[in-house]
Length: 504
Ligand SMILES: *[C@@H]1O[C@H](CO)[C@@H](O)[C@H](O)[C@H]1NC(C)=O
Ligand SMILES: *[C@@H]1O[C@H](CO)[C@@H](O)[C@H](O)[C@H]1NC(C)=O
Ligand SMILES: *[C@@H]1O[C@H](CO)[C@@H](O)[C@H](O)[C@H]1NC(C)=O
Ligand SMILES: *[C@@H]1O[C@H](CO)[C@@H](O)[C@H](O)[C@H]1NC(C)=O
Ligand SMILES: *[C@@H]1O[C@H](CO)[C@@H](O)[C@H](O)[C@H]1NC(C)=O
Ligand SMILES: *[C@@H]1O[C@H](CO)[C@@H](O)[C@H](O)[C@H]1NC(C)=O
Ligand SMILES: *[C@@H]1O[C@H](CO)[C@@H](O)[C@H](O)[C@H]1NC(C)=O
Image (cartoon, rainbow, N blue to C red; front, side, top):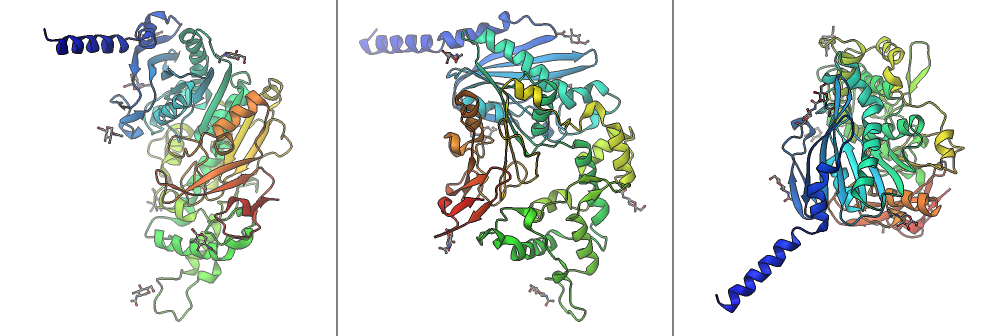
């Protein structure tokens, strides 16, 4: 054997040793250490940082067949029975570089999907993190059909079950256990966070709840009612995407500069009361490409009006002006809104043939049902507050209760669509795609950590505006204000200068 090959063998030997270090060995043996009721461990596997993880078991409608993982971690996949007729799929990811913090992720829409991107994001931030499928697989509401236990998982039980088991596993996996417990979720995930605060006030020390789908049943009805206002694409009340673009430009013309800056971003949509009659085609118009019929304008005005029940009670706030270009392809596309359709078919009426021709009577029926109080808002947060819990709530816009400043702070993120996206400075560290900084002032999750662990509450949330959407360079930053303050451009200089803005 030449000296060279002996050295190569030595090198190979130490590499083989390195590939079975203590962390990996612990991961390989972890399944054997778990003996919890109702829990079946499918596998525990070491995932090396930089792996493009393949997820062949993830339901196709979840649209996530792989996830890039940037740090070394131990991935534990489980099935957990929640009743004799329901089961959640649960994953726990334990990073090698661990900060002593436990976290649970949430879900979205009516799903049914483990949010692997949130597991990857929070593991990379040093959290021992869990994610569950919320009791069923995929984005459809069909699994709720005649399956109340599956619905119960979706309403609250899946998240809580994952937290209880996740904390036990974290204590077993890391000798040092964990110190603090966190939650990060948006939309349905935001609702799950609020449900947890009220129903299980001991589960988390800090909850970051984005655009929460609270008032859930009315949100479902409100989402359904746009189809009854606008009709199908052949209806004379229907607006095409190009028509909504006209509406959007007109709304910006009337409302963009209320905050002092002409930047295509409406800082406070509550101050915007657009008059859309300006868009009605003159009676002698030959070319109607750039104007609307009065039927269309009246339909658009209804979209921007509050949504009332048949006794005149407010069920949901108006759609906020400025959102129409993002909302049109999803909510105003000439079809019944899919989640609403599923909810009425498989939960409210148990009738898969229900048409989607929604009326306010349907809203009343849905609200009377309110299974497992999925509406979510109970109004009593005191047990959570007494336990020292903190909530950071962010939203494109929706006023909350205001007098809770000590432990509850609400930030409106201008120019943000639903949970992300949009044309504003929405990169606030709410997820792996919108991450621009881990500095607490510019990252909602790390802001929460600082609040819980150092007692320093956030005054503003600083967001990155990406040049051309996520994944592109940061064009500028803007600080978003704590409710009920609002952002006003004071100058001097450009609206891209974050110090030219003031919260008033
Ligand atoms: C989960 O429930 C199924 C069906 O009742 C049962 O066969 C299985 O053994 C249970 N698994 C665990 C881990 O309890
Ligand atoms: C990961 O793998 C998928 C499927 O093979 C591929 O489409 C994707 O581009 C890969 N991602 C990265 C970052 O390599
Ligand atoms: C928990 O906090 C204590 C006190 O700050 C610290 O000594 C300990 O290392 C922390 N534990 C973990 C798991 O981070
Ligand atoms: C969800 O999908 C996983 C992976 O394919 C499967 O093991 C599990 O049984 C499914 N859960 C339900 C409730 O169908
Ligand atoms: C109508 O106006 C639009 C926009 O100005 C223009 O693109 C289009 O060619 C015009 N159509 C006719 C028939 O003149
Ligand atoms: C709603 O009702 C109208 C009139 O009865 C009907 O033409 C239309 O197809 C229905 N829409 C749906 C989605 O079923
Ligand atoms: C402000 O910055 C934007 C984006 O860089 C630029 O398009 C615009 O011209 C600037 N406005 C002024 C008044 O400098």
